[in-house]
Amino acid sequence: MDLQKLRTKAIEVVKEKLRHSVKADLLIVQAISNTEELDKSINLLSERLREWYELYNPEFSKAIESHERFVNEILSGKDLKVNDSMGSALSQKDMDAILELARQIKGLFALKNKETDYVESLMDKECPNVKAITGVSIGAKLISLAGSLERLSQFPASTIQLLGAEKALFRHLRNKRNLPPKFGILHEHPLLGKVSSKNKGKMARTLADKISIAAKVDIFKGKFVGDMLLQQVEKKAQELKR
Amino acid sequence: MDLQKLRTKAIEVVKEKLRHSVKADLLIVQAISNTEELDKSINLLSERLREWYELYNPEFSKAIESHERFVNEILSGKDLKVNDSMGSALSQKDMDAILELARQIKGLFALKNKETDYVESLMDKECPNVKAITGVSIGAKLISLAGSLERLSQFPASTIQLLGAEKALFRHLRNKRNLPPKFGILHEHPLLGKVSSKNKGKMARTLADKISIAAKVDIFKGKFVGDMLLQQVEKKAQELKR
Image 1 (cartoon, chains in turn blue, yellow):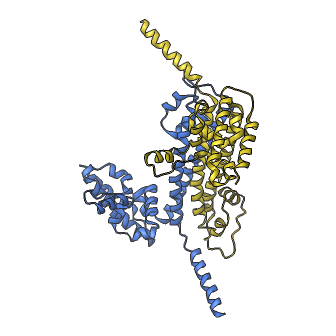
Image 2 (spheres, rainbow over the protein chains, first blue to last red):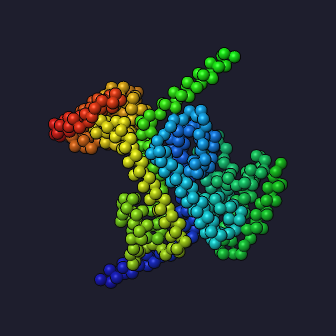
């Protein structure tokens, strides 16, 4: 009987713990993964929209590269057909089926923007220091790759430097002929584009150093030092330009 | 000079031909491919929606299997949280980000239904006989696999029987140890589920025979014989039950 009580109590304690285990960084992980999946869906559906629409007006689709602009312009009716177009005349009903798809894609673009804003507001609260150095997208992806802000703050800089490059790293470890990777997701950082290619590894390491510090400050709710850290990496980028 | 004129004229003729090359079956191919891609996007985004929502109310997500019902119920606010739920309390802003995603997924479901209706109306006009035997989805996929209704009508029944099983067929041809496939996309046909498993190949062949006849009738705009053909395959299915 007492055993039964103990069991009930134990389950209650675990449930209570679970209830409080969701921190903002878990929401960041969900939201940033969602924006990546929205991107995938948008591309898949936009390719179809173009192929379909090209039956009607191929010249217009070829002239516009950005999916978002293409969707907006055919929805606003700006897609004037050239006189000697190779496209066929379509009935209103056929056009409607195409425009419905365009409307949904537009909705997905809007959602992606909203979710990105949401991630930004979460990061402003949870990890302003990391965000100052990495920006929204890279910062959120680092947290997502690490699993949580707490785990990110426990990683050494060398691990942060290679987050997202696991495949290349293990290929190197299995087979010494491949060079080790110099950076993972950090290759998306704008400062990496500013330094000469032989210095990219060094730049990634500097970034990882400062991100590691920033994550530790964020997890212990220290005061904002992001601007100072950013200045330091920007100075390093200047030195590594040549 | 005359050569220049000839060239311009030739281009005009080709453009004119292209303009008239879009027949309803090309629209069927686009629309049915679109519904398949919508399915993919819906599944991708629904998996994310569930994972995200489970931070708040895991018990509810686990209780509902259908993505469509899940989306509708959390949007209608019917997702009452059980008292001792393991989920965390989320702020309104956090919930809004999740519900926005649910709203978009709902829009994608609605679009899929619309596009399916559209395909049905096109098939009623273009290939009522094929549709009578196969239904909307399989018929449209057969046209999509063949490339056009015209090509489908030129295929022998043995080819129609294996449309969509190309991978298994070539695996068999390369390597005689694998048995040849007995059917491709036709495995989705409800009548195939009604016959015993050793007769499935025969049933698929009967279906392919009649689809081949139906496609020929449709391409030459013959009168409607779909009901008669359907009766014949249904009779065959009765015979092949055991």
